[in-house]
Image (cartoon, rainbow, N blue to C red; front, top):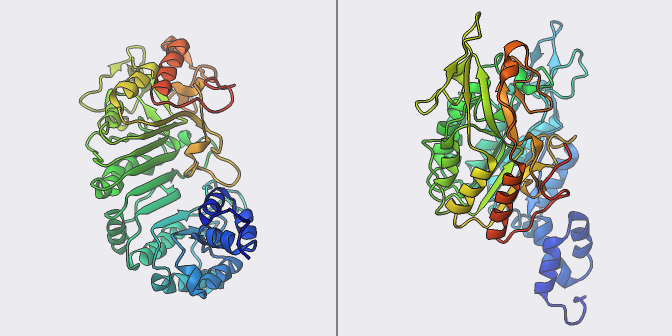
Length: 455
């Protein structure tokens, strides 16, 4: 039956574009016109996972020649899969091949058969578990250790690189902060990265403590991954990448140090940073360096570090030729290095306003989905950033405090550290500079409280 009189297929297409999955299923059964519009949207993405019911759904799409050509995106979801066991010494071990659930092997077979069956896949997603916390008993459902993640990654990369055309979009949610040293995996990753136009990395840092920053001294992999990120993940995609999202489960940029001064993405149109710490003008300049192309900028739960007190200065971002750190003369048992940063958010907003002429969309604030029950690190949720000036937008770093990243009302400093600089008092200046920027690009502030949160 055709659609209502006077309702052309283009209108059905717009309706389907804004409809959720439940509505799309109903539209597919409503009329011929609504079905023609809803079907491509409904089967645009498939989500294989190591669960039999889900694999059966993928099989049904594979069996339908008309439906499988609509598939543009494949999301491998292992968020809730924990095929782990413990020996009597409470050591985590990888199950042998005959102990791996049949549904996982079934998914492997699905991957092997999809290279020719899904010819139009252009986007790939892997969604790992958000949890690394170790429990005290065998009922630890929050654990998904490295061997599992690396095995799944290799399986997925093997399938992606076998496609007739390599995908142009890659999203990795809750990516373990350990780069693979397996030669085959490295080669497949380089092959895939060389074709990407869009990449989202949600980096998850292993920790046995609820405050991730407490383990910065304990685990070198925090710092090793940050050092390797530009060469392993960004340089291979630098010539063609248009959309980049870098998120982390702990604050990064200063400590662990992420140095992007030698990274240039000449086609970058969208940049999204989550949990990023700004402490040096070179970090601002990295953004401004893409002024000729950048159109969208998202600053999610980020902060300016106005004061630093750190013992291990060689591991932080200011340990560069441009950084200046003074020695604290009051310390007697260890040498503590201190530095201050004079730039404020109103300086950054003005720099964005003047230095990014093509910017047409900007959000700064905190995503409402940070560490929800299911998601963990926000994943492609830039629309969830409520534009506001958070009280946490200014922080200081003091490694005598736990956690070391502190803002003015959770700050405590033992002994002589009470003389640290006061928190910046520039709310009106930040407010006005942000308002001028938003007005210039023609954007209204969004989110409750407009600019001010309720921290």
